[in-house]
Each structure stands twice: as C-alpha cells, then as structure tokens.
Length: 201
Image 1 (tube, rainbow, N blue to C red):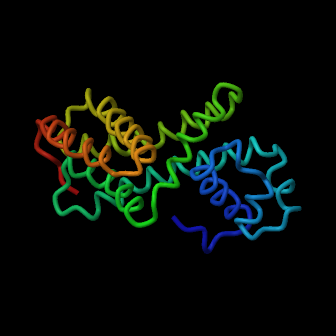
Image 2 (image 1 turned 180 degrees about the horizontal axis):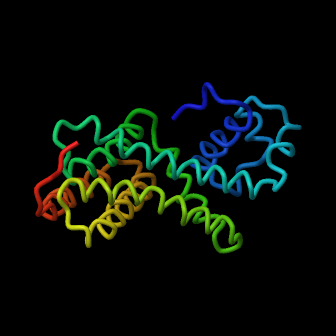
Image 3 (image 1 turned 60 degrees about the vertical axis):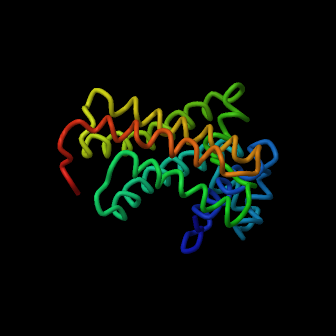
C-alpha cells in the first residue's frame, strides 16, 4: 500500500486506514492522521466536516475498495486461476507482510468493526459495505473458475472470514501458522467446488 501521488484529502484517507490497521480507531487521532499524511491540520475540518467519524468511514471504504482491486491483481498473476490458488494469494499477501515487517498491523475494516460498530451506526454500515465490496469480486472470480453460481457468495464469505480470523490469530501468536493453516486446509476444499469448466481469463 502506498499513499504517494495523492492529494491531501486522499493522503489523509490513506493515512487513516494505515493508522487504524496498526492502532485501532480509538487510538488514532485526527492530528496523528494529518501528521502521517504530511497535511496541514487545518485541512482536516475542510475535507472532513463530519469529523473523525467521517474520516474513519472513508478509510474503511477505501480499504474495502483496495481489497477488491487486489483480487483482480492476484488473478492476473496466475497462469491458470483456481479457487484454492486465489485464496492462497490472498493469504500470501499477509504472510509476506508479516514475515517482512512484523505483526503490528491488521485489516482496517476489522479494526473499525471491533472498535466502533456497537456505538457508531455509520461505521457499522461502512464496514459491512466494505466487506461486501470485497466479497463481490471474489464471488465473481469463483464463478469464472467453475464454481456453481449458488455457492459463489457463500464461499467468498468463507474465504474472507477464514482469512480475517487467521490474521487475528497470527497477530496474537506473532506467527504465520494460522494463515498457512487456513490456506492449506481450505485450498483443496475450494478447488473441489469448481465443478464446471472454467471460462478462463
């Protein structure tokens, strides 16, 4: 993830997502975001008149779009896409990060869900929308790889849910064991669901 090449508003949304994935929503202050984004403090009120709640919600939405775009990138890098291969690529994004940079960060959508959804309805909606935004391209890709249409959305939810749970366990254990576990166990199951001839890409 990179925030380069963006204007101040976009940089602040990006920075909010990065700080939330590291520290959670409660510990992320508006001034912290401005500093991380190298943006003037006065621009916060200009770009986000709804305050921290608006900024958090936009950061969550950005994270959902980012995850959705990654799906197409993973598929483009696979000579012959398979459901298990797609899930392995989704998991590998996190194992690579943790093995390279440590276990300090997680998914900003999950962090916002844990921190805010009980008290902030707009953030709950933003998180639900972000997960749906991510789920759609995964389900679409499964269908293109031969998974029957009646199962694609459920299996996409299974993949994302397993990944999010494994991320939490990995951060708690400071180990990628759980991520490798879900990739190894779910991969064959997902491939077994592709009963139709893939359409190819």
